[in-house]
Length: 200
Image (cartoon, rainbow, N blue to C red):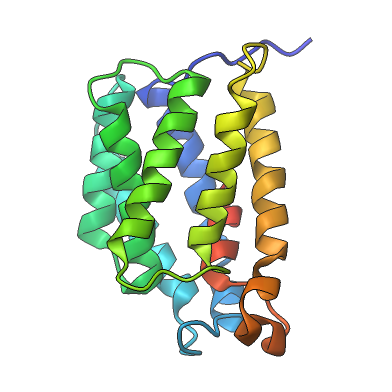
């Protein structure tokens, strides 16, 4: 039987990030192809890859063991390297995440749900005209799901939660064309939202 993962510290967070970032970077060409919102300039994948790559570069030397310190580094490097709309929104998500985890040694599933919600709120608030059917919708849907899911004290295993979280994100992504006519006409999902799901 697989051992439960009941907490994430800085090292575990770093390992998870590396896998997610590499997956996102490997998908950048596809994300560029489906990029139609806000303008079809085919650079969402490139911008997101550039943004997360700056996290990889910045955290490669020293990985803090505390989740609070590690998440702060991630937020700082994401902000420094943020490129384009999608990169800026992703960076704001990491800023909100880190604010919620400040001073913590480890992150429980409840901490994760709270931090994810703060990340989502931060990203929404950063835009003067936020739109449904984008990466923001996926942030919000996953956040709502996590708050409910982690309120059950039995749900304390990160491996189960991340799997459920990914399914919820995929479902939210698949619904983006229903929330934005532009996507529906083009026959694609939102590129930024797809990038985040690839990262997850």
